[in-house]
Length: 248
Image (spheres, rainbow, N blue to C red):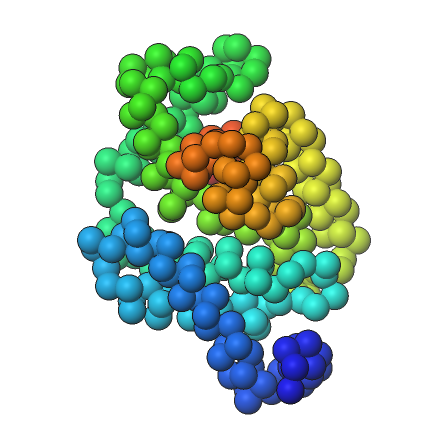
């Protein structure tokens, strides 16, 4: 049975056998995500544990996925798989406390400078404000991308569709209006990003390119793309927090 047929049947029946076939179909996706994250967490956790956590995220993705939305399952699932792995690692308290602290300092620094300057600060301005070298800032931004953005990525990749997730109220008029508002707000925030940040967000979430592919297009290293991505996400996150859409 083809994958499309499996999805169509599962959407109607929620049959456990079909769900198992879908899990087997996409387990390779879990291994890809786990492999990427193992590069960062490998000194603290076994690859097999990351895969186990990721499978939980895959199952959740299959159960929650809505075929009627114009979203590729692979894109939707990767975010939830990554988020589930990160959530479980957080429970084990294996994310370096120094990195958590640095992430918060960078986020707060961006807020303070944006309020002062009326625009997003450059990396040089941010590093000066935090009294760290620009190399240290960029290294921290690259590391932050591994653990600090999963739930916001979920909001971004689904354009707000899954942000309100109460099945009984999903189609209520006030929720439909709120979804529309979230989409429009995200659009305005993204359009207000710096050009390089806007390009990375667009290519990553809308064109679904990898860091390597984006780096080739922009003639930048994967590490640099990761830094730009992290800064853009923190920028979006701060603006959503100010608007009361995203909890800090």
